[in-house]
Length: 592
Image (cartoon, rainbow, N blue to C red):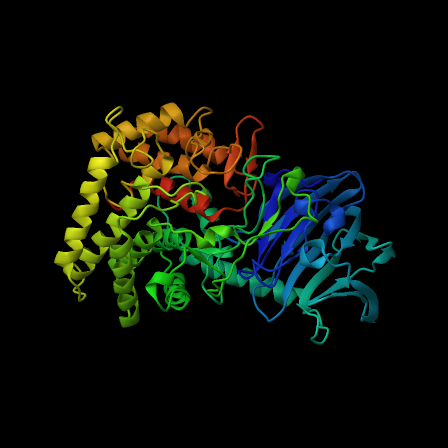
């Protein structure tokens, strides 16, 4: 049975990712890309579905930390016979994908045990495994199954049915290195690189990233950790930013709200880029802008809400029946059917992001502005159409007020592009369209009953996504309609002190069951409080939110207040960028 979600730590090379538990078991490994088939899938089942465990044989206390501004994990294991560290990381260079586990003796002697169960393709393949000749004093175990090759170099492992296991001891001052390398099975078996070199290169890369970061104000450790996790979720070669490193971790335990988040949502990536800009990262923004130009090239009517890491468009959703799901939450889904949805807000958020880049001095290359004008043409054609909304409603399409406000924001940024940055375009036309959308919201998107904005036209229900309206300048944070919206959110969407996205029991989303509070929305409310002078409320909610992060500062998508545990896919990019915005709001550094 997998551990609680908050007991996992992320390892990553900015191309793929692994999750290692507090018990020393890597229960999730997707390489060479975030959206590749998993080599280890115990996270969504049990050990038989693939894992790589490494921990002391005797009972041990584990104290974990990330090394400075990196995702290099150090765990201090304390046993009755001694202490030892494991240093675990994924090297960030090279054409193969590796996980390195270095064991260093600190005091006394500690006996460790490995258990390796390789199950490629989401546990569909039991690979052919054999011992290879030793290189110096390192044993090598090779597993081949379909397109996947896995080489493990280190202490000897012995077959035990379809798993492999082995023990070794480490004394004070001794070091034992173990390297797992994934490679395409049709290529020659690679030779493991020197771990000292791999570690030094990886430390240097993350140090370069940390030096770029700028943040002034409270909660700096959490901001820096969130920025590091956002970098770890960004593919360093394509520029694509995935929403999370996992699939099918449940929004409600035992339920069916289980989705694959290992893809690039234009919305999430745009919000991430705007956040990175405020903290000194420009190279990453230019990389993402290049990704965007490639991904959505062509007919603007074909623009999707999400893509694969290199801009792939076909992301069909399927069920992996052989995996029982995290704590039995099924189905396990691979791919995401939301790729076929129309979400009107996405184009607006993309245009806002590109305007943010202009505002800090990153000039648009000619092809970028041409692309934005094409997006505006589509925005004009679809501006009155109902959509599936930010939350990817699988029920009836509606005129969601959040979506309409993002359409407004898209036209607003086009006007700025012409009038403030001197770009060519019909600003008068775009201004008229912007004002038309605003009038529509003012007329149909405000409740006569409670005076606040509504979830969609024709209802009095509220939606936490409305907290983004002041973020894009549609209204001031202290607009009476916004204050009434906040009052309604506090009444209807905060039963346990955290914010729900909306009331799922209304059936608006077309999916059975309910869900837990959404951490992103709670951080948005912190920002709203801070910007309207409710500083004590902002700090109190911020404190509650940061308290649910794990010992490494990682947050997933949702939080179950009753069970006091994280829920949903992890680490969640949207959660961490909302955390950063909330901290910036408390510091008074958000642009007005």
